[in-house]
Length: 77
Image 1: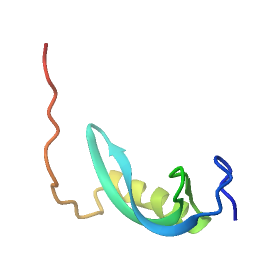
Image 2: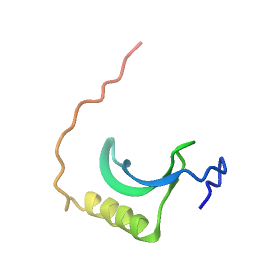
Image 3: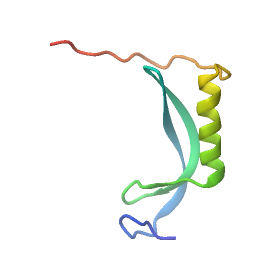
Image 4: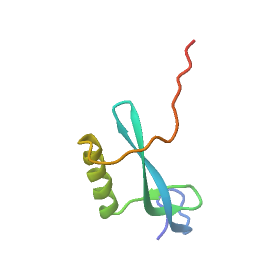
C-alpha cells in the first residue's frame, strides 16, 4: 500500500487518539489504524469507523464511562 498523499510505502498500524466532540467537551478515544510514517495520513477501515460512530452515539446517550484528563482554559483579552 502506498500513501495517497505523499506516495510513501512506510505505512504501519499504530495506536492513535481520535477526538469526539460532545457539546463543549472533547472525548479522546484510542483506536488502532494504519498511519503513514512519512506524512501522518491515517487510514480507517470500516470496522474502526463503525466503532467510532457507535462510540459517538454511546457518548451522546451517556452510556460510556468518562474520566477527566485535564482542563481546557480560554484566555480573555
